Length: 66
Image 1 (cartoon, rainbow, N blue to C red):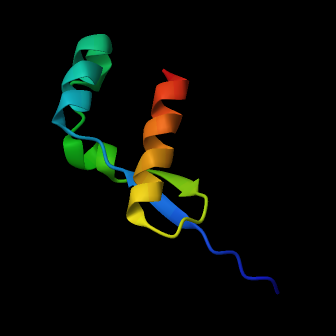
Image 2 (cartoon, one colour; image 1 turned 90 degrees about the vertical axis):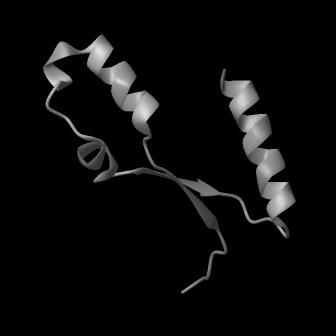
């Protein structure tokens, strides 16, 4: 079996997302922050030698996707 060195970034929803969701979808009034955090989004990231390289990659990716 081959080994793959990767990092993962986990995106945990925060209160502003829940506030927005409740405004956008009135049926979500009963949702809690705990409900949203039950299954977070996980992104696989390329292998980098330092945390600074990871941050630069994320910053570039976010700017490109906006």
